[in-house]
Length: 419
Ligand SMILES: Cc1cc2nc3c(=O)[nH]c(=O)nc-3n(C[C@H](O)[C@H](O)[C@H](O)COP(=O)(O)OP(=O)(O)OC[C@H]3O[C@@H](n4cnc5c(N)ncnc54)[C@H](O)[C@@H]3O)c2cc1C
Image (tube, rainbow, N blue to C red):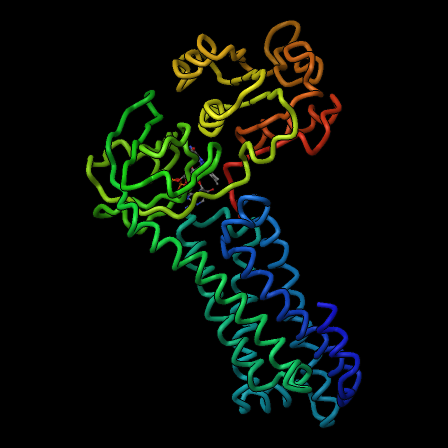
């Protein structure tokens, strides 16, 4: 960004101040577009270190910044050129519509405005995930139009061969990263591993586990706590891709997901035929032991948030305590497996049941006092939290109050950008 700014300020002056501001905004809009694409490129190293949830949250905010940059760029360029030609803004729009490169830019801005408008929470909540995702794919058309617009119009980076190479080098890097992370890697991985459903096991009335096997699974290098985006290639399902954590400790032989039925896809998992082909993207996520800073660990799960926690259990050494929040013991899926670790690995397990706030004293399992009573050395532990957003939020607040340093706290939210 600094290099681009130096190029801008040392380049030829704009025809007037408004056009100058518009050009400055255009350069930053293009940089934001590149950043935006990198954030969703799902580059394995970036994802493992930063985490998909954080990357998609940044993607969301970058999206809004990009929106304002392109809207302001278009407005300043319009008013700037209208003033230069001493005509009205409407007459200037008419002129621009007849100029092919500008028309491309106008189309790109229109698409970006529509997609961002549909991405605000109010609109997002009123449409299915699949529709929201399909609308988002339109942005690739907008990016293509915007790149063509830059190819014809961009002047700052045409100062000399070096600046041109720098600019298009950056674009090249971004596009190659995107194709590598989103297309080439998933295609190669699935061609190599040939995943299939090995078994479907009901865990409770509304929770199902799916076991998946394939060739040379160790080479996937999946870590406990990570997730895949799963696509089951059966009739009526192949177009749905949903994220589910790995609920077993990866052993190079079998991968397992465990899902609660909340909608069409998750409820339909129970009917998956054994042998069905599976296409995955991943493994993704930074909710892993790579980020551990202490010997002792506290794992906190709420409901089906137990899946990555169960997975982590098999990879941890040192003292481990698990707090598992469920309405009743009958809702505690995978409990038998947790008890195995209690008996064989010295893990401490507290099942936290009952309605929050009920009884006297009120049942407040994640109140700071209760957390320190259950885990007196909590400040000396890494804490991994996975549960519904409200529970995760209150646990994170309590951990802050208790004084657990931020770098020791790791959270996985079962939500990506837009949720
Ligand atoms: C990183 C991550 C890990 C997860 N791990 C688990 C797990 O181990 N077990 C489990 O039960 N649930 C998990 N979830 C939640 C799970 O992805 C959703 O419950 C599931 O996708 C719902 O899909 P549906 O079609 O059944 O329901 P729908 O009614 O279609 O969707 C319900 C909600 O789920 C979310 N959702 C739906 N489809 C997708 C998608 N393709 N990508 C992202 N979000 C989507 C949206 O917020 C949507 O509003 C995880 C989510 C994330 C982001």
